[in-house]
Structures are given as C-alpha cells and as structure tokens.
Length: 80
Image (cartoon, rainbow, N blue to C red; front, top):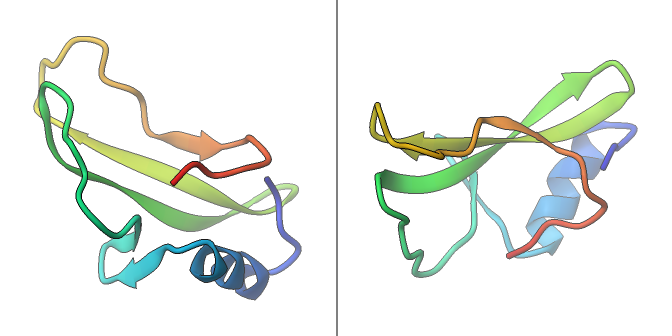
C-alpha cells in the first residue's frame, strides 16, 4: 500500500475508521490483547523510497515468544 502524498494516506486512514492520537493512529473500540501484549498496536505514516506507507508498531513485553516484528504494512487493505 503506497500513497503519493502524506495527506492522501492520512485521509485514507480517517475514511476507514482510524482515530489519530498523540501516539499515532489506532483502531477505535475494544481490543483483545494477545499473550504478552501490553497495549494495542499503533500505526504511523512513514516516507519510503516508493512513496508514503503505513508502519505498524506492536507492544509486547520483552522475551515474549513469537511476538510480531514492527514493520511496514504492504497489503492492499488494512484490517480493522
């Protein structure tokens, strides 16, 4: 998922139900945390070589096995 401008990605996120907070963009509502997770994931707009993209940051306690790595979201859709 790549956008030409930061404004386009920002508008896309707002149109798809994300809320902007001081920590980044979050999915509103109740979130069930997985084992070892201490907070809901946040999404951040970042500039990449091919345009503007979305980066997801996960919050897990240190030493949690199989915790997902923080990375760029590359698919063409964002699950809510």
